Length: 277
Image (cartoon, rainbow, N blue to C red; front, side, top):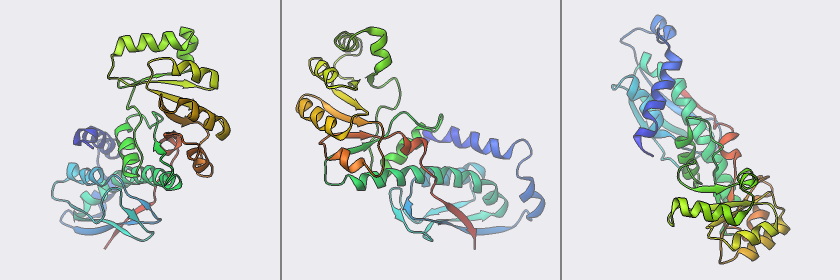
């Protein structure tokens, strides 16, 4: 993850929380010269992501605050486990506490959800991928967290890969002309993927210059047929209706990638708190 991915975001988050008058609670209650130490504690087990972002929250507020990570991003933590130590002026630590916890908890929640699916498909060869269903403004962080959880990233936006979906086809009319037009526009190095819902559509995609096919909302039996038809010709991606309970069965069809929207748009935060020592 690049520093540029979160510097502006953290600045906006702190401004949102502190407003024009700052942390009036800490400033009115805590002596200016008070120094405190604290520990970030996981309230449940999961996979950590976002330590660099949390550290920058305090750096942006007060460079004298020291933040020491005790685990690495992608590391597993048990309930009660210590994630990081923080020390410095009490007012500064308290002013950054919630922003740091919000970002760290969200990113760790995404990493944890991803890791559970990765574990569920272990040994099948299928990879777990995210989608563009990320929180607006947080995409770089969400996608980094997916990688920390052992997943892979789909396209980052509309700009770095072509994905021809049902509405594109409705506007254009047919798969062959859509793919031909896209390839002429983007050249040979940009990935082109086509979403299909039937085996007939898949057959049409196989005859084009597409690189990948998205098999949308197909049951395991149809998925297995689709994978067999596309073998050696297209990378296959399954999407739609993926759950913790059925992801293994989907993976066992032989599909290459399983993309899951809820690991970024609905993953619960990993509960992490800051306890002063």
